[in-house]
Image 1 (cartoon, helix red, strand yellow):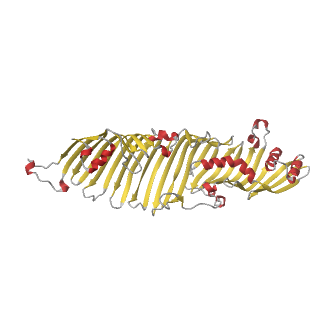
Image 2 (cartoon, rainbow, N blue to C red):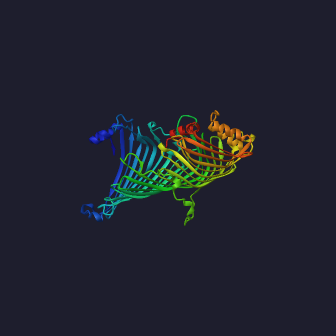
Image 3 (cartoon, helix red, strand yellow):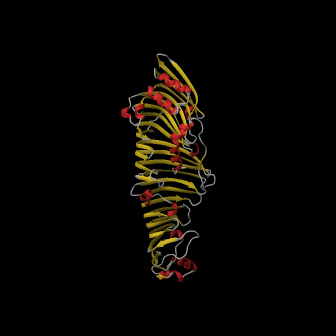
Length: 511
């Protein structure tokens, strides 16, 4: 049958808004009746009917859309569009199979899909007594989001060769279960799978799945040359999402890194491997935004030291980093046990090779955008401070050993805590004094500088609180001396050293 849509019902007139069109339709219906002649055939009861229905249609559009089909978005559909439907009914069990193909379709202000094809299979009893099951497959060559979304061009490869498969089952009245969902894109650069279920009111749900991502070689998040990150390696995520009472969510799982590298103009990580467990308890206050159900605000250094407990199972959460670089300085390798709970990234069992020395201890990072801070507690042994110079080859080796417990609040340019230096060279102590008092205006520091000309440092203590530093210097030599300098301004120094880093952190689109 060849039909003009505009000559049919008012519905067809509405469809005519997409332009001139035609439909080629072939269909057949077979209902076996078991009689010698259809004149004497009788239709059996519904539960005994065996029937086959098949239809193949091809729709072709001759003109571009002339009016919007929706209030805010223009529907784009370019033909020919083809679809085939086959239905069977066997003793009350109905099966419907749909095969479709669309060369180009989409909403112009949202996204356009090129070469979309796939299948839809439905199965249910005619009385729906056992619910219904569906399998949906979709393959598309390319997904092109509208320009208004400003998708970075480095993400474009992940929007090609997309394949998705969904298998679900529902009892119609109470629950929907996703037995299998598989998605792949970018020729294997992105792969995801999940399963789970929810009640129809979406009050209680549980899903779990896996995610594999090979990051783009270059990711740009701005127009400046420094607004880019070079990436490499492989990211795997195992996750579990639980929803309770509609507005409560819990997301937990493990982030696995395989030779992952990330390099920014200010610093980065190279060849990171290991596992990072995470857990996030979230709330949906208005079903439009997410927020943490609670925040961790106490000092994690005051907690029980978990390293004193022996785990009953093998601890495979150790993270290794071959190299860390920041502000033109490099150190590593680094080993630690890392986990993320709510807003707190905890670093335990830290062991790092640092400028020919060793750093051991524990640390944390608070990732709240309004309270971005980090802490470190541990010991530095035999650090070669000459390597901190811009020309280390011209500097004599000067080891540094110290005990430290520090908290750095980058949002307020504050450092609080204590450092006890047990080994330091004369030149390194003089350099520290020059940083704290570049103009030489502090009389006590000038006396300590003079005393260093005939002595040597035995001990240096630093107590930092509320933006000020109390310095305690013990000198040995011909005449042992002790200097205590209080209330040295520290915030201006921290602000000058970290303002570029803080500005960059605030611009990164993770907040």
